[in-house]
Image 1 (tube, rainbow, N blue to C red):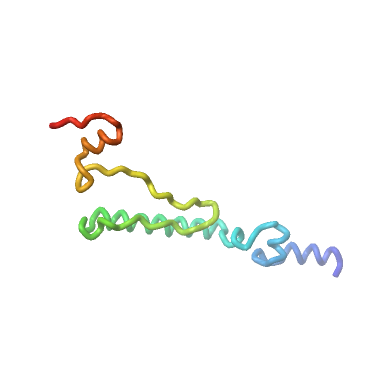
Image 2: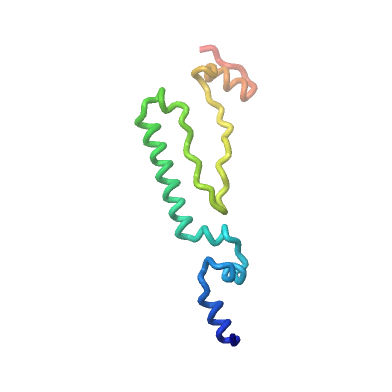
Length: 111
């Protein structure tokens, strides 16, 4: 094989081949997540989140109380969602004023 033939071979080798990956210096996982696949995953994530919101807004509160938002599709470059430290007041957690007083170190008003 001549140098010219080798150059043409490498230039036209399939994108997902090990040779092309070696020339680019990428991993199989990086090559798997093409811009088209990233966009498709984003669309699926948005659709799942929209479905979740619609069910929460229009569903029976007793049945949807324990529903959790959907996790996004795992892909490189996107960090996983962390659990939030949201403090909820009222209901079975106690009165809002008393809970706020505990959080901020003040006194609760007795109204």
